[in-house]
Amino acid sequence: MRLRNIRGAREAMAESDFTVNEPEENKGRWRQFFGNGNPIQLEIGTGKGRFLTTLAAENPAVNYIGIEKYSSVLLRALEKQQELQLPNIVFIRMDAEHIEDVFDRGEIDKIYLNFSDPWPKERHAKRRLTSRQYFARYNNILRKDGTVEFKTDNRVLFDFSVEEVKEAGWKLDAVTYDLHNSDMNEGNIMSEYEIRFSRGGTPINKLIASR
Ligand code: SAM
Image (cartoon, rainbow, N blue to C red; front, side, top):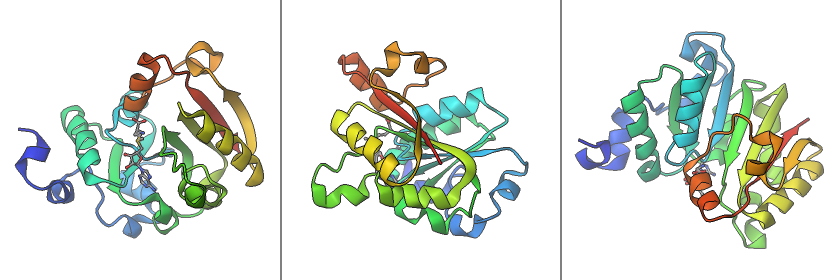
């Protein structure tokens, strides 16, 4: 039976072995939590989890944490993980606005943002996961030479993000406006949204940012 049919999404999540319900308690202790010294990578806005579960299966020596705001979506990621039973991935249902309460300085090795919500109204710009306000948060949790990788079909959001990387004092290590036809595509794992948009012929943009 599918998890989401058993009971309410929140209750099912709270009982899952693959979610961390009080993530603040692990702040500064995530390596102990995973029981090894492997790097820890985050995906913010993980959605239904295709990208992160595939990445985790391919990289057993890396630990992965998927952050997602909505339990109804995250349940689909939990269903995938229930089948795969990967030892190196967990999920947190939370708003990424509070990531500094959950991760200590330099505790995270890499951050992935895939097809983040565009928040098209100017007054909502600071909610975009690639705004300077979010880069300031990433600055506090990401290891010194860590990177942020961002993919989107949305050219307006992408152009905004390129500017915000610079405004935040970060560097652009790589940029493409057509990922699937570029050399940055090697080893690329497609998310649910990426599959949907690229099938429709929309080119995918990608940037990698560091400090
Ligand atoms: N990354 C997935 C993909 O590429 O298929 C999902 C993309 S979907 C457009 C964006 C996801 O990010 C949604 O599931 C949304 O709930 C989540 N999200 C947006 N803002 C968030 C935030 N501040 N904290 C956590 N999750 C967030």
